[in-house]
Length: 304
Image (cartoon, helix red, strand yellow):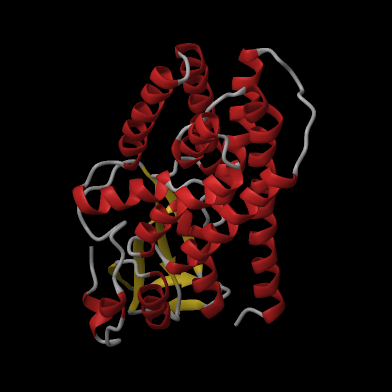
Protein backbone atom coordinates (compact mmCIF):
# COMPACT_ATOMS: atom_id res chain seq x y z
CA UNK A 1 0.00 0.00 0.00
CA UNK A 2 1.08 3.60 -0.62
CA UNK A 3 2.03 5.42 2.58
CA UNK A 4 -0.50 7.89 3.86
CA UNK A 5 2.00 10.69 3.36
CA UNK A 6 1.89 9.98 -0.39
CA UNK A 7 -1.90 10.35 -0.44
CA UNK A 8 -1.61 13.60 1.49
CA UNK A 9 0.97 14.85 -1.01
CA UNK A 10 -1.30 13.97 -3.94
CA UNK A 11 -4.21 15.71 -2.25
CA UNK A 12 -2.30 18.95 -1.67
CA UNK A 13 -0.69 18.74 -5.11
CA UNK A 14 -4.08 18.57 -6.83
CA UNK A 15 -5.57 21.45 -4.88
CA UNK A 16 -2.43 23.56 -5.27
CA UNK A 17 -2.67 23.13 -9.04
CA UNK A 18 -6.38 23.95 -8.97
CA UNK A 19 -5.49 27.10 -7.01
CA UNK A 20 -2.91 27.96 -9.66
CA UNK A 21 -5.58 27.49 -12.33
CA UNK A 22 -7.92 29.81 -10.44
CA UNK A 23 -5.22 32.48 -10.16
CA UNK A 24 -4.36 32.30 -13.88
CA UNK A 25 -8.02 32.43 -14.92
CA UNK A 26 -8.71 35.39 -12.63
CA UNK A 27 -5.70 37.25 -14.08
CA UNK A 28 -7.09 36.72 -17.56
CA UNK A 29 -10.43 38.11 -16.46
CA UNK A 30 -9.40 40.98 -14.17
CA UNK A 31 -6.21 42.15 -15.90
CA UNK A 32 -7.44 41.87 -19.48
CA UNK A 33 -11.08 41.08 -20.24
CA UNK A 34 -13.18 42.79 -17.57
CA UNK A 35 -11.50 46.24 -17.57
CA UNK A 36 -11.86 46.43 -21.34
CA UNK A 37 -15.42 45.16 -21.64
CA UNK A 38 -14.45 41.93 -23.42
CA UNK A 39 -16.41 38.70 -23.24
CA UNK A 40 -15.63 35.00 -23.02
CA UNK A 41 -17.64 31.90 -23.74
CA UNK A 42 -19.53 29.58 -21.41
CA UNK A 43 -20.94 30.48 -18.01
CA UNK A 44 -18.23 33.12 -17.58
CA UNK A 45 -19.46 34.78 -20.77
CA UNK A 46 -23.05 34.79 -19.53
CA UNK A 47 -21.95 36.40 -16.26
CA UNK A 48 -19.92 39.03 -18.15
CA UNK A 49 -22.84 39.80 -20.48
CA UNK A 50 -25.34 40.24 -17.63
CA UNK A 51 -22.80 42.33 -15.71
CA UNK A 52 -22.43 44.55 -18.76
CA UNK A 53 -26.19 45.04 -19.01
CA UNK A 54 -27.30 45.49 -15.39
CA UNK A 55 -24.04 45.99 -13.45
CA UNK A 56 -24.43 43.20 -10.89
CA UNK A 57 -21.27 41.97 -9.16
CA UNK A 58 -19.57 39.54 -11.55
CA UNK A 59 -18.57 37.19 -8.70
CA UNK A 60 -22.18 36.74 -7.61
CA UNK A 61 -23.31 36.17 -11.19
CA UNK A 62 -20.61 33.59 -11.78
CA UNK A 63 -21.73 31.52 -8.78
CA UNK A 64 -25.46 31.91 -9.50
CA UNK A 65 -25.21 30.90 -13.17
CA UNK A 66 -22.96 27.96 -12.31
CA UNK A 67 -25.53 26.39 -9.96
CA UNK A 68 -27.81 24.86 -12.67
CA UNK A 69 -24.82 23.31 -14.43
CA UNK A 70 -23.47 21.89 -11.17
CA UNK A 71 -26.88 20.33 -10.47
CA UNK A 72 -26.80 18.73 -13.93
CA UNK A 73 -23.26 17.56 -13.24
CA UNK A 74 -24.35 15.94 -9.97
CA UNK A 75 -26.27 13.36 -12.03
CA UNK A 76 -23.66 13.09 -14.80
CA UNK A 77 -20.09 13.08 -13.49
CA UNK A 78 -18.51 11.87 -10.26
CA UNK A 79 -19.38 13.60 -7.01
CA UNK A 80 -15.68 14.24 -6.40
CA UNK A 81 -15.45 16.30 -9.59
CA UNK A 82 -18.54 18.28 -8.58
CA UNK A 83 -17.12 18.98 -5.11
CA UNK A 84 -13.84 20.18 -6.60
CA UNK A 85 -15.73 22.27 -9.15
CA UNK A 86 -17.83 23.97 -6.46
CA UNK A 87 -14.66 24.85 -4.55
CA UNK A 88 -12.99 26.05 -7.77
CA UNK A 89 -15.88 28.23 -8.92
CA UNK A 90 -16.25 29.83 -5.49
CA UNK A 91 -12.48 30.36 -5.38
CA UNK A 92 -12.53 32.01 -8.82
CA UNK A 93 -15.40 34.26 -7.77
CA UNK A 94 -13.52 35.34 -4.64
CA UNK A 95 -10.32 36.03 -6.57
CA UNK A 96 -12.21 38.10 -9.14
CA UNK A 97 -13.90 40.06 -6.37
CA UNK A 98 -10.78 40.88 -4.35
CA UNK A 99 -8.09 41.10 -7.05
CA UNK A 100 -7.16 44.50 -8.42
CA UNK A 101 -4.90 44.83 -11.44
CA UNK A 102 -3.81 47.83 -13.39
CA UNK A 103 -4.81 47.79 -17.04
CA UNK A 104 -1.82 46.23 -18.79
CA UNK A 105 -2.72 47.22 -22.34
CA UNK A 106 -5.49 48.91 -24.29
CA UNK A 107 -4.64 47.13 -27.53
CA UNK A 108 -7.75 45.07 -28.29
CA UNK A 109 -5.85 42.37 -30.14
CA UNK A 110 -3.42 41.86 -27.25
CA UNK A 111 -6.30 41.85 -24.79
CA UNK A 112 -8.01 39.05 -26.73
CA UNK A 113 -4.83 37.00 -27.08
CA UNK A 114 -3.42 37.30 -23.56
CA UNK A 115 -6.80 37.30 -21.83
CA UNK A 116 -7.63 34.05 -23.61
CA UNK A 117 -4.17 32.66 -22.90
CA UNK A 118 -4.38 33.14 -19.12
CA UNK A 119 -8.01 32.03 -18.96
CA UNK A 120 -7.38 28.92 -21.08
CA UNK A 121 -4.34 27.94 -19.04
CA UNK A 122 -6.33 28.28 -15.81
CA UNK A 123 -9.26 26.23 -17.11
CA UNK A 124 -6.93 23.56 -18.48
CA UNK A 125 -4.98 23.15 -15.25
CA UNK A 126 -8.21 22.88 -13.27
CA UNK A 127 -9.59 20.22 -15.62
CA UNK A 128 -6.37 18.20 -15.46
CA UNK A 129 -6.87 18.00 -11.70
CA UNK A 130 -10.52 16.98 -11.78
CA UNK A 131 -12.34 20.31 -11.57
CA UNK A 132 -14.04 22.72 -13.94
CA UNK A 133 -14.14 26.51 -13.75
CA UNK A 134 -16.94 26.82 -16.27
CA UNK A 135 -20.20 24.88 -16.17
CA UNK A 136 -20.54 24.67 -19.96
CA UNK A 137 -18.17 21.68 -19.96
CA UNK A 138 -20.55 19.88 -17.58
CA UNK A 139 -23.45 20.72 -19.89
CA UNK A 140 -21.43 19.22 -22.74
CA UNK A 141 -20.88 15.98 -20.81
CA UNK A 142 -24.58 15.79 -19.90
CA UNK A 143 -25.81 16.23 -23.50
CA UNK A 144 -23.15 13.81 -24.74
CA UNK A 145 -24.42 11.19 -22.28
CA UNK A 146 -28.05 11.70 -23.25
CA UNK A 147 -27.86 12.30 -27.01
CA UNK A 148 -24.36 11.31 -28.12
CA UNK A 149 -23.46 14.80 -29.36
CA UNK A 150 -19.77 15.59 -28.83
CA UNK A 151 -18.80 17.93 -26.00
CA UNK A 152 -16.96 20.21 -28.40
CA UNK A 153 -20.05 20.69 -30.57
CA UNK A 154 -22.27 21.39 -27.57
CA UNK A 155 -19.92 24.08 -26.26
CA UNK A 156 -19.53 25.54 -29.76
CA UNK A 157 -23.31 25.89 -30.26
CA UNK A 158 -23.67 27.29 -26.73
CA UNK A 159 -21.11 29.99 -27.47
CA UNK A 160 -22.43 30.79 -30.96
CA UNK A 161 -25.75 31.68 -29.31
CA UNK A 162 -23.98 33.70 -26.60
CA UNK A 163 -21.83 35.69 -29.03
CA UNK A 164 -24.82 36.32 -31.30
CA UNK A 165 -26.65 37.88 -28.36
CA UNK A 166 -23.52 39.89 -27.54
CA UNK A 167 -23.36 41.24 -31.10
CA UNK A 168 -27.02 42.22 -30.99
CA UNK A 169 -27.12 43.70 -27.47
CA UNK A 170 -23.66 45.26 -27.05
CA UNK A 171 -21.70 45.62 -30.29
CA UNK A 172 -20.51 43.60 -33.25
CA UNK A 173 -16.89 44.62 -32.60
CA UNK A 174 -16.96 43.38 -29.01
CA UNK A 175 -18.57 40.14 -30.20
CA UNK A 176 -15.84 39.59 -32.81
CA UNK A 177 -13.02 40.22 -30.35
CA UNK A 178 -14.78 38.00 -27.84
CA UNK A 179 -14.90 35.20 -30.42
CA UNK A 180 -11.14 35.63 -30.85
CA UNK A 181 -10.73 35.43 -27.06
CA UNK A 182 -12.83 32.27 -26.96
CA UNK A 183 -10.78 30.63 -29.74
CA UNK A 184 -7.53 31.38 -27.91
CA UNK A 185 -9.00 30.14 -24.63
CA UNK A 186 -10.20 26.89 -26.22
CA UNK A 187 -6.89 26.23 -27.96
CA UNK A 188 -4.81 26.90 -24.86
CA UNK A 189 -7.14 24.72 -22.79
CA UNK A 190 -6.65 21.91 -25.31
CA UNK A 191 -2.88 22.34 -25.15
CA UNK A 192 -2.90 22.13 -21.36
CA UNK A 193 -5.14 19.07 -21.02
CA UNK A 194 -4.43 17.59 -24.49
CA UNK A 195 -8.09 17.54 -25.39
CA UNK A 196 -11.00 17.58 -22.96
CA UNK A 197 -12.71 14.78 -24.84
CA UNK A 198 -9.59 12.68 -25.26
CA UNK A 199 -9.75 9.08 -24.17
CA UNK A 200 -6.79 7.24 -22.73
CA UNK A 201 -6.22 3.53 -23.10
CA UNK A 202 -4.73 1.74 -20.10
CA UNK A 203 -3.26 -1.76 -20.03
CA UNK A 204 -2.45 -3.15 -16.57
CA UNK A 205 -0.38 -6.24 -15.83
CA UNK A 206 -0.29 -7.19 -12.16
CA UNK A 207 -0.34 -10.24 -9.95
CA UNK A 208 -3.04 -8.41 -7.95
CA UNK A 209 -5.37 -8.29 -10.96
CA UNK A 210 -8.47 -9.45 -9.06
CA UNK A 211 -8.24 -6.62 -6.51
CA UNK A 212 -7.45 -4.07 -9.22
CA UNK A 213 -10.48 -5.11 -11.31
CA UNK A 214 -12.84 -4.71 -8.38
CA UNK A 215 -11.28 -1.38 -7.35
CA UNK A 216 -11.56 0.08 -10.87
CA UNK A 217 -15.26 -0.80 -11.01
CA UNK A 218 -16.11 0.31 -7.47
CA UNK A 219 -14.00 3.47 -7.29
CA UNK A 220 -13.86 4.66 -10.92
CA UNK A 221 -16.89 3.00 -12.44
CA UNK A 222 -15.14 2.16 -15.71
CA UNK A 223 -15.71 -0.94 -17.80
CA UNK A 224 -12.87 -3.14 -18.92
CA UNK A 225 -11.84 -5.98 -21.19
CA UNK A 226 -9.88 -8.87 -19.69
CA UNK A 227 -7.21 -10.74 -21.61
CA UNK A 228 -5.88 -14.05 -20.38
CA UNK A 229 -2.10 -13.88 -20.00
CA UNK A 230 0.22 -16.87 -19.95
CA UNK A 231 3.92 -17.58 -19.71
CA UNK A 232 4.98 -14.01 -19.00
CA UNK A 233 8.64 -13.86 -18.04
CA UNK A 234 10.23 -11.00 -16.06
CA UNK A 235 12.52 -10.24 -13.16
CA UNK A 236 10.46 -12.46 -10.88
CA UNK A 237 10.60 -15.42 -13.19
CA UNK A 238 7.90 -17.21 -15.12
CA UNK A 239 4.26 -16.35 -14.46
CA UNK A 240 1.28 -18.23 -15.84
CA UNK A 241 -2.47 -17.82 -15.95
CA UNK A 242 -3.04 -14.21 -15.01
CA UNK A 243 -5.46 -11.56 -16.27
CA UNK A 244 -4.37 -8.53 -18.29
CA UNK A 245 -6.69 -5.60 -17.73
CA UNK A 246 -7.49 -3.26 -20.60
CA UNK A 247 -9.70 -0.22 -20.05
CA UNK A 248 -10.42 3.14 -21.67
CA UNK A 249 -11.12 6.20 -19.55
CA UNK A 250 -11.49 9.93 -19.99
CA UNK A 251 -8.21 11.82 -19.57
CA UNK A 252 -9.71 13.68 -16.59
CA UNK A 253 -9.67 10.40 -14.61
CA UNK A 254 -6.10 9.35 -15.38
CA UNK A 255 -4.62 10.43 -12.03
CA UNK A 256 -7.30 8.62 -10.11
CA UNK A 257 -6.65 5.47 -12.14
CA UNK A 258 -2.95 5.54 -11.24
CA UNK A 259 -3.78 6.06 -7.57
CA UNK A 260 -6.15 3.09 -7.59
CA UNK A 261 -3.64 0.74 -9.21
CA UNK A 262 -0.54 1.78 -7.26
CA UNK A 263 -2.41 1.66 -3.94
CA UNK A 264 -2.91 -2.07 -4.58
CA UNK A 265 0.31 -2.94 -6.39
CA UNK A 266 3.15 -0.41 -6.58
CA UNK A 267 5.00 -2.68 -8.99
CA UNK A 268 2.13 -3.07 -11.46
CA UNK A 269 3.10 -2.70 -15.13
CA UNK A 270 0.95 0.07 -16.61
CA UNK A 271 0.90 1.08 -20.27
CA UNK A 272 -0.85 4.33 -21.19
CA UNK A 273 -1.66 5.19 -24.80
CA UNK A 274 -3.72 7.73 -26.71
CA UNK A 275 -7.03 6.67 -28.24
CA UNK A 276 -7.98 8.62 -31.35
CA UNK A 277 -11.48 7.32 -31.91
CA UNK A 278 -13.88 5.27 -29.79
CA UNK A 279 -17.40 4.05 -30.47
CA UNK A 280 -19.75 2.03 -28.30
CA UNK A 281 -19.14 0.53 -24.86
CA UNK A 282 -19.64 2.20 -21.51
CA UNK A 283 -16.76 4.70 -21.82
CA UNK A 284 -17.98 8.06 -20.58
CA UNK A 285 -21.16 6.48 -19.39
CA UNK A 286 -19.44 5.09 -16.32
CA UNK A 287 -21.32 2.66 -14.13
CA UNK A 288 -23.91 4.05 -11.73
CA UNK A 289 -24.07 3.29 -8.02
CA UNK A 290 -26.17 0.18 -8.49
CA UNK A 291 -23.93 -1.40 -11.08
CA UNK A 292 -20.88 -0.59 -8.98
CA UNK A 293 -22.13 -2.96 -6.30
CA UNK A 294 -21.18 -6.00 -8.34
CA UNK A 295 -20.03 -9.25 -6.86
CA UNK A 296 -16.36 -10.02 -7.45
CA UNK A 297 -17.33 -12.98 -9.61
CA UNK A 298 -19.31 -10.72 -11.94
CA UNK A 299 -16.39 -8.37 -12.55
CA UNK A 300 -14.88 -10.96 -14.90
CA UNK A 301 -17.79 -10.38 -17.28
CA UNK A 302 -17.68 -6.58 -17.17
CA UNK A 303 -16.38 -6.10 -20.71
CA UNK A 304 -16.76 -3.22 -23.16
